[in-house]
Length: 130
Image (cartoon, rainbow, N blue to C red; front, top):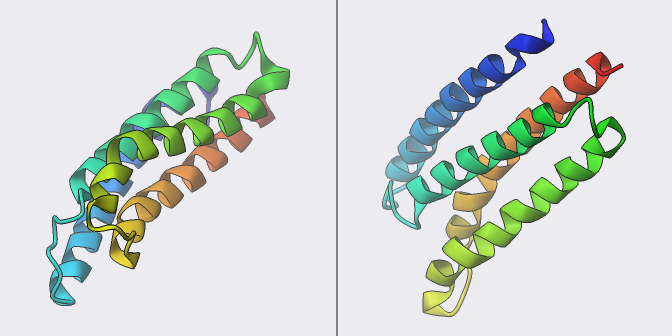
């Protein structure tokens, strides 16, 4: 895969993957008798999608100028995702005084998918940087 196609391939896989994952997640929740779109599910998927895109593009844009620091950009992006989680989603989860398993999974499932995808593309990108 040529490096100029990385952004379009990344975005395509990210959007299709998150869409399919959201569909599967809501289906499983509905089949288990839970509210399919409860616990800020859509907000969590949207936030993780936006953050993954921003992190990827930051790494992609600075791949030549700061090639020795790309790993730190990646780690900083993961930290930024958690900061955004604690600012925007966590207060809603803590309203009842406890973070339940379903609330945790609502954030963590799309987070893991985007993390694996970012890692895969970062490795591919690092293999092309000279």
